[in-house]
Length: 121
Image: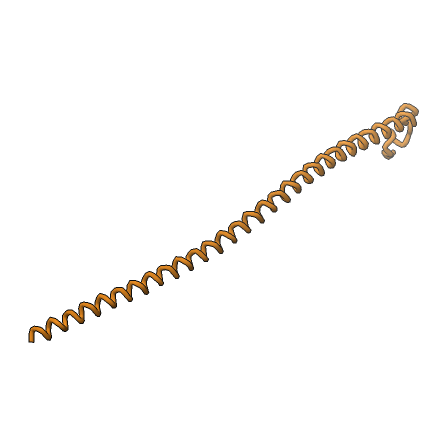
């Protein structure tokens, strides 16, 4: 005797054969579960799509703000460089004027010193 899945020894009794109605009920129940799961997955997918759209909008706003900050930084950096060049130019002019003044004072002292030496001789 061999086992065929319905009973022992190859003999099948009527009580062991599932009826078509119970098989159909199980299939319908399984299909209902699958459809329910698919519906929940679709709802989650729609929820995620909404979240992604919201995050994309936030990222877009942040990109605009970041671009504004970058432009403002570039402008302020350029203005700082120009101010630095202007200050450097101003200090160069002050230094040149100071050298001219010191040269004039040195020339006056030199002339005075020479006149004192000539008068002493």
